[in-house]
Amino acid sequence: MVRKTRGFSWGAAGLSTALWTGVAIRDVLKTAAPRRGARYVCFEGADRLPNGHYGTSIRLSWAMDAERGVMLAHGMNGEMLPPDHGRPLRVVIPGQIGGRSVKWLKRIIVTKEPSDNWYHIYDNRVLPTMIDPEMSADLPDTWRDERYAIYDLNTNSAICYPAHAEEISLHGSDNNTYYKTRGYAYAGGGKRITRVEITLDRGKIWELANISYPEDRYRLAAEGDTLFGGRIDISWRESSFCWCFWELDIPISRLQATEDIMVRAMDEAMMVQPRDMYWSVL
Image (tube, helix red, strand yellow):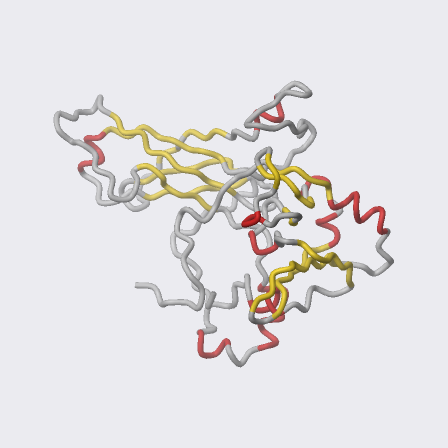
């Protein structure tokens, strides 16, 4: 049993990958020529919420880094940006939580300090685990502490197959009959997933799954090739922003004897998913 938070559960489906069309924000900022002392880029959307327009910020150094791939997007998957995804213009910050990629973009401001927008301060944070919902209401300085703001995504993975409520026939199965377990994994900040492991005995023994990165096809494609509905040259880029897919064939006879299947991923910085979650008020 895990104590309820003030936030909500995304489950395993709160993620996707898209092909975006737009302009690199670093090119826009170079033209604007930020003054000495500028450290943050603030974004504000046109959507009006109970506590004002939605807004947030990221470090200026990230926005200016070509490897980070931050962009102003007007297209998605080869079509005009849909209204629900931010038409006419939105920010796309690969490798970071969605809350930083402001939709319906109205304003960009370069500042010395992080955004003072209500939603930047009171949303998308991981507060220390000892702060409960009752305490958090009286800790404005804690909410404003940038150490607790979420930016880069944490290493994560999910099992897609077996799916929820899926039934697998065990009739006539033997050690030569396999079920292909499948899912996805991702890491933040452009880091690459280097391994995905599966356990059928709650962590006593782990097995290595096979990984594929569809994103790599763009790195290897000839100049001008169209893949997945679009063209992009990332042959020079080391960062990996999209999810990878994993799979592992497991004898059905072994599935008969297991109570559950667990997955964990590790990125190139050797950051591995923990066995126990870190509880936070959001």
